[in-house]
Image (cartoon, rainbow, N blue to C red; front, side, top):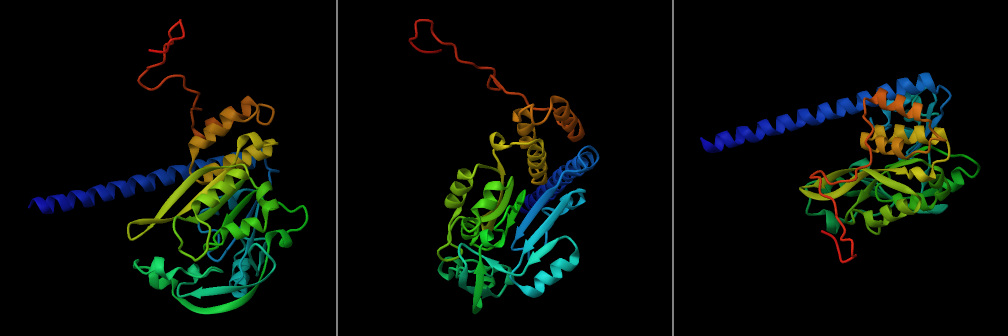
Length: 318
């Protein structure tokens, strides 16, 4: 009897938590929609661009809402020529490049896996994967020699993208190193990272995180994914440090990116710290009102009210 009650309680708790997270996501999406309506009305000339590297699954819901912006456009990179053509036909992308990108121009070996979404220019690390139930997904079906280029070669001029999304199965570091100029100019980056070698020779989270920090980005979202209970990978979103923003448009785009990744606390952070020369106090107030945010202020005390009292003679504090 007790076991049955315990089982029912666990199911009920699970149901409540799922409902809670769905409601939370719904509210976050509602705020983003309200912000998009506001920007379309107040800043109709704002142009927002996205480069989707590894576009096989399309925008995947992560950037769908942004397509409602008047000034939004996206370009994709997808080495599967048939998939690239199909994506272009959907109408979400202005252009889809049917090429593979890495850290150099030339040829690389492509490991085509049982589940196409796990295909990579890095060989799956079967020794690390064999203990997981999903290991068959990574079984290599064929090896191909393919031509690769770099983001720098693909966009050699003054092209820039506000947001860059990467889903390249362990090759994120190579893609970034081959297109550092684009990354330097971007305001938001989302990518997948791994915590152990899912693919042989890939760069892991510490290297990816350090690289993004050096480029002036701040981590604002990390959605963890586990393989049979072991944390294996995460989808991360990085936004450019507010001190590096140069225009009003930059601030608005970073607000959009942060809210797109359901981080309203960072929106408040941006509004509090952005220079009034870039975004006026009135504009900040309007955005807070649209999003129904209070505007968090700097705190001087711990929640319990304790503060340090320094001895006058310099002997210490109490």
